[in-house]
Length: 415
Image (cartoon, rainbow, N blue to C red; front, side, top):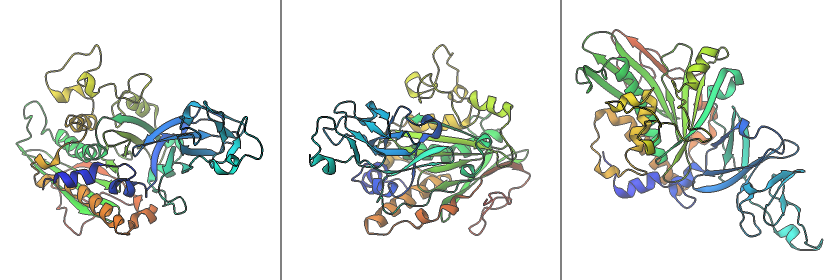
């Protein structure tokens, strides 16, 4: 069912005074790759998340700090400052703050000035976990569980993490992550081949079942001849999707974190729970052949982006849209960006195979409304619920994905 304009506003607005923004602030949010702050006193980093600016830094003792980017003196951006001798010093007024926002130094202020106790930069919780730096912007005395994804618990050499900009609202990005699995399944089954670009000769079904973490999504594509392509993936509260890699022992996932109402930062991971990633696989990843698109040099923008029509400079424009991309994953993101920064969902025509998209929207909106009425989502206290895996493969005859099954053909496992 298409959304009303009012529901679309509820779903997409994530600022500090919005219901969805309040909901998201009850979860830990990925902010940076951990190696972006590689050592004590490294240059600070400016981060925008959920419509607000922050500064992240690692002090002389190696402690992490996350402060409101606005200096409490006159609002200068603290990320322009210097990290030194246990704190971060504002580039304008030279006030210095520790990781908890307390004043360490106030040049030219007398020792008895009340500013020494009155002035404080607003601090937020920050954690290094699973190769990422995470921020928590909700009530600071009541932090939630960190999500116990399997990839957060493997050795660094067993995972590859990247981040990249997505030029649309976070929910469109999430929906691209959900759609990527079925696009990949269609391609795997030959339904998107040159002889059948519409997929009309393949039976295509998507079913979504609600779980404690969000949705378990089953996809099956059955061509007229040959095996069926099946997958089981997940959408996990509030903005995570898993991807069916189709490669034995290899798993992938993405977080679609809101920068503001109109842009998202994607964090993608490829990991192997058993052994270090091979040199061959790492080479594939760096060539943009998995969930990690090639980036424009010196930026987090994808080399193929909306501004260049998804054809990098010097590249030749192919005759069909799909041929511009190396993966169904990146093509799905581009399709979501093509809708504009915030799509008008009141004009949609949804079908039976859009159940996962509808389900994710419904769960998020209901959780935001419930929080306004005082009910905190149970999932924020169940980090272990994020221990799931996706699956993709081919079978001769896929089993029914019914309301009681947690798998398709015995696949999506908890770990």
